Length: 73
Image (cartoon, rainbow, N blue to C red):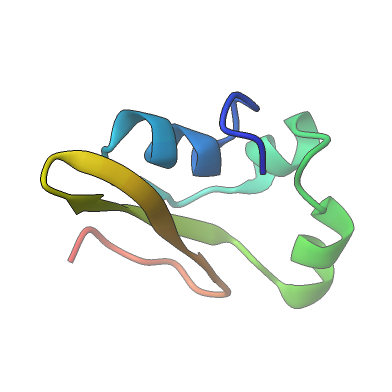
């Protein structure tokens, strides 16, 4: 996913801030970069992303697409 795509995934990688999206439906409808047909078929409802930071530099991100709701913990 391109870093400047405006998606939640790219936002984690560019900002260095973790994110939890508990209602993924609006993002699936708005983003041509995500695969809404895959997410719907798999029952994906939630996304959590954590930046991978080393010595203050964001090297990438770890993202999880979930079939169940998740909380901050």
